[in-house]
Image (cartoon, rainbow over all chains, first blue to last red; front, side, top):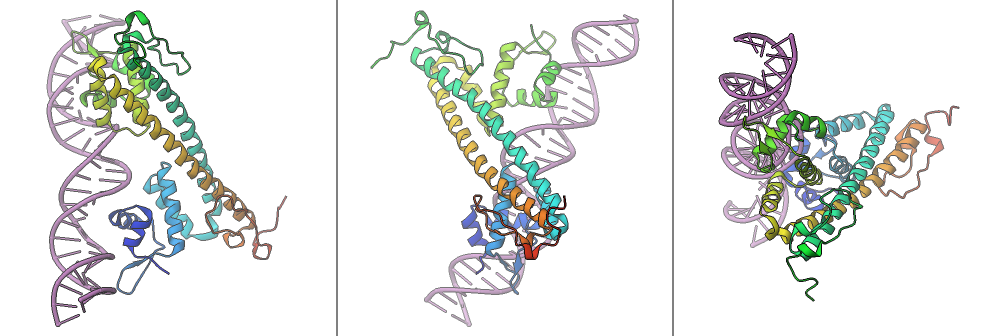
Length: 151
Length: 151
DNA sequence: ATAATAGTTAGAGTATACTCTAACTCAAGC
DNA sequence: GCTTGAGTTAGAGTATACTCTAACTATTAT
């Protein structure tokens, strides 16, 4: 069973433009062609494309992915190199998650701060301009410009 | 106490080019100038720049950040809008973390798979072409091309 | 057989975010 | 006072990843 480029576009969410672009950039040398020249994607090809998408989404550049694909095409001689690439990317994603969590803590703080500010009607009444996410948020009632808890 | 653009570049890791570019793009209308025309960054400015960096690093485009900055310059009238922006971005980051974790699971599987393949000396000996991250990895000893555990 | 649909290529165009150059000005140290 | 280093602007150039157009061909449905 094989898939046309349009079917692959539907399955993956990538546009046919993008799929052809990836092919031109050497990211899919494994995709075979029908005698007419049309691409015929196999299930294995889709799995590999899924891996390519994983690498791209985790920040690897297309040029690096092409390099990885070239190594994969060379077979078992490049097993260690590919293992090391995966280890590197694994660490990169761990770092990305750690940073995203720090960013999330900051955003959590901002949501708490602006919730209080909306409640008070003004930023001026809310304590803690400071960016420490753990900071408790306090409203200075004397600066409130909006009736408290207008239930 | 104020900082020159060069000092801010050092502190933040952004280049002076980038800082001036951000200014031109309307991301820092709050930065005051000396009579000579030089930018003078305050500590508050640095805090705001840090927030801009947080939004940018979590995937917000410069055009959206400019919009946010414009709202911030308008004061308390835009409190709710800004709260909603933070809530949206908060959810976006949660989604990003969830996706990164799925990608990490796939990479973890790849590391296990290629560790086994390196051990066996060939991909062919390793079970599970499939991409299920939970899949146990097994080496078919009859296909091994490398002596087992050459301690 | 023919029309509609979906594929092909080469190459141009776009979006985003920088990154650098040129020409100039300002501030500080000798 | 003059050099050095760092700042200023406008505008050009670059990198990356698409995204689309044009001209053409192949497949499918009627």
